[in-house]
Image (cartoon, rainbow, N blue to C red; front, top):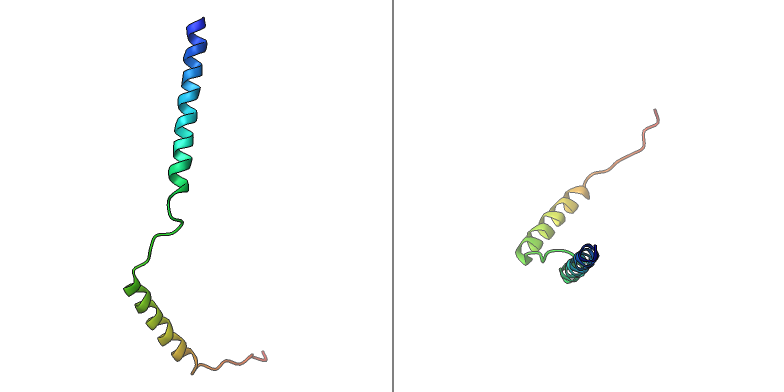
Length: 64
């Protein structure tokens, strides 16, 4: 019976070490991937185009 207790203890230690390792590895990863500056410039240009088109749109509240 003594071997079962020690075997379970070492298994618990191994599981704890794996969990600690996972926490350390996932804690060191960046929260978001780095974006390509070229894509950022293209997205900004598209957003500016849409904003300039939206300036010409007028809306009114309907009465009915």
